[in-house]
Image (cartoon, rainbow, N blue to C red; front, side):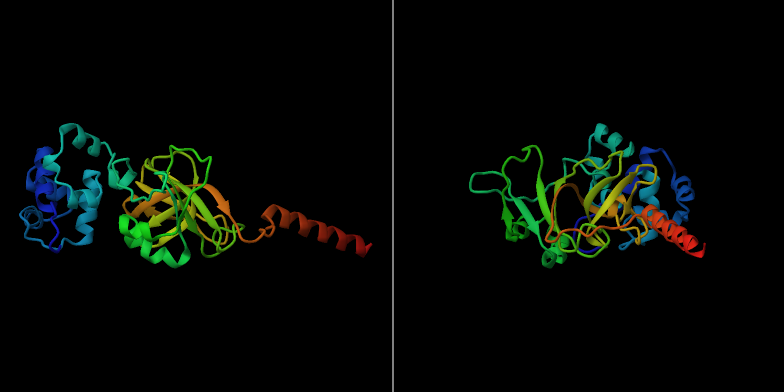
Length: 266
């Protein structure tokens, strides 16, 4: 796993003992052999297979990030119970997350802009104050002060009638357990930045992402793949959006054409 400090082995042993399970018992529940589990707990598996990481994360209801990066033995009993209840900051968002931001000369939070050309860099630098400070920034008056805003430039046609190259201003979401479908700029590890209609599927610990453009099928991403969510607040477009016909409108048009053809036959 490299030189960075990880707590995979000690966390597995800690959580197993917390549940008062033997290695045989936990191995059976995870579909492991006892020898494999023992190797994990004793740090003999330097690069655990992804399947093993996911099986353990699902069983303990914690994210892979938490099992790797957080020393669970150092947490309070209350915090551990909070994690076991499914309130994992890596999965569900939290005000514990550190958000890199910039300030104006008047000590007010800027709105940083992420243009298309900066999208690739943002995925690796969204948590880096130095990278964020390099982004264009501006300030808008009369915005509520209790939110953090950022602007993202859209790319592609999946969100038509919002045209390609438009700008979306979003407010930072700390709590991801929202109940209704919500338009959001989504930052994921695999897909980078996208603008989607987002629904949190609590039972599956994942998000359903839907494009406004009906030519694109909805799909799911696991919560731990999501790095940031920015709730849609405002949009700026460079061109007037073209009208798009709904399926109902198209059906009505076809029916009207058929009626006129029938009249011609009389």
